[in-house]
Length: 110
Length: 113
Image (cartoon, rainbow over all chains, first blue to last red; front, side, top):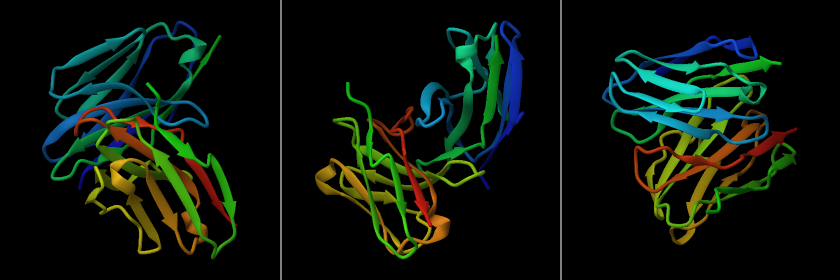
């Protein structure tokens, strides 16, 4: 069964303290792994798509990497405005639906 | 470009009543998706339209849920009659091509009391 597990569930960082979020996945025939950011009361906001193991993408203080079993979202020198829930999702198999993890709630304190 | 618009943003209804949620996708996006997040759980797929056709409705919980997409433009999701377990946030998303990053709306928070 296709599954996505994110860890940790919650993470509290000091401003400038770098860290990584993990997304482990099981899917038959991965077509894409997606990272989203979600702020309270808003819908998920697209960050990255990764398609194959070894691929990396960067955007400002965020860098996403992908292996055959997991993805990491590295946050370098975070700022308070990076506080949000980060969601990981995979698309694969016979359908076009996204399978989401439960997310990591990130809080960056000044 | 305008994003995905959902209406209403919040809805509180009594058990047994009917509620209709609306989604306006990004213009030109043939793919439209409905997802739902119930409290404490992950976001889960409900169904997928390609233009006006239902491509995949494997995530629809039961026959109390009816989704339509008129003329391949906006979509509605009707819950009739609503039950307590239907409470949650309903998200709509659209994409131009399959497999690419979807654009999500802000969601409709449905509370059934």
